[in-house]
Length: 74
Ligand SMILES: [Zn+2]
Image (cartoon, rainbow, N blue to C red; front, side, top):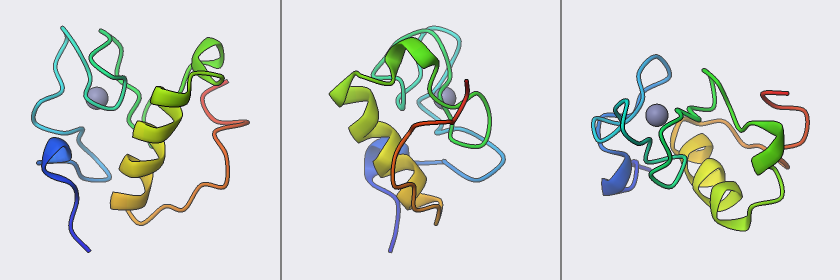
């Protein structure tokens, strides 16, 4: 499968091309990169359904299948 268009450019080493210092696509536009293999989801966003959904989609696009965001980027 291919990554959703919003994650264009996303690889295991680089975040999506739309990600920059002003906003990460995986973070829902927040100025903090939540790439699954980089920072991950900060603890205080773990209960944010929108972040969890984006994170799940991004991780799936990378071939990572997270059951949960728990324990990631703590
Ligand atoms: Zn990012």
